Image (cartoon, rainbow over all chains, first blue to last red; front, side, top):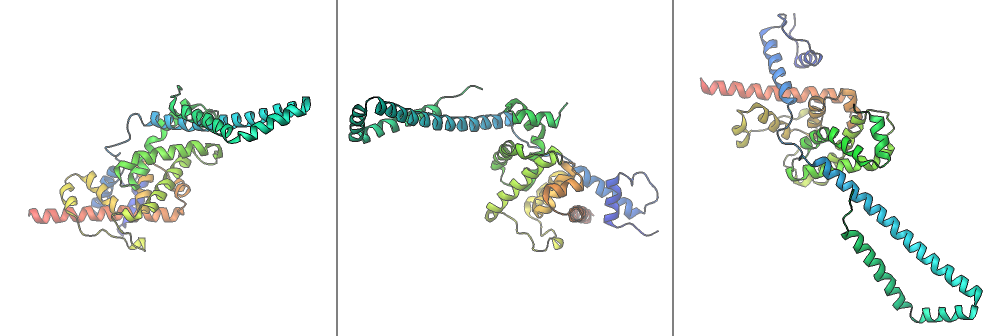
Length: 137
Length: 188
């Protein structure tokens, strides 16, 4: 009977056959043994793995990611509501008393950079506060 | 009992405890893939974290057309391959253009030292191999995926996966046999 080549021997072992049979030659038996040892080594897990707190660390990172997303949404909503409120207030004022409305608009335009700075400082403070505060989850 | 549908559904409803369960269940699977392909010890855990963050962000696209483990392994594999492409200048080994003609080169002093420990020696030999061989050996023997699943994970056709697997094992077996013969010759 022709000797089996390496591929055929590997195929036999993968199927779980080739054990305890006396039909193989000495060389085939030696090859089967070598492959069997190799398969055992290949299935051995690495000695070093991930840290014990790996899953908890990943969860914490995801939570931080979600918090950042939530903060961005809140900031956008706050800015939108603020802008709409100002626009609505100005609209109402112009409807009730156009003269007063125009006067206020003139004052706002006169001090536009001061007001812009105040708004920017406020939002910077909000952003810094969000980053510094540790959330409980 | 771990129910894939239940866990995925809970995670998509922002249940982070369910996600932590998923991480605990599949962290070994991801680590085996990354550990084999990435040689930089310090980055392995960071890359595994990156894999799970990608899994969380793209879980909404998982349609249960394959097993969850196969889908996760694919993300791990692609992340590792991207890392290797970005860092190929730091790679210690050069791979041949024709993978079928790959063979082990001359031994290093480090290999001489660890020959006594077969497992460590086999791992050292695998480190030298092209990443395709390393991948199929790991996915088949450590992660226990079938050849069909390995094709889904890597995109390599099943026939080629089988060919790589058989060739890689043959190379390892012949190298170990040659070393044993050499050692016996020196002893006698």
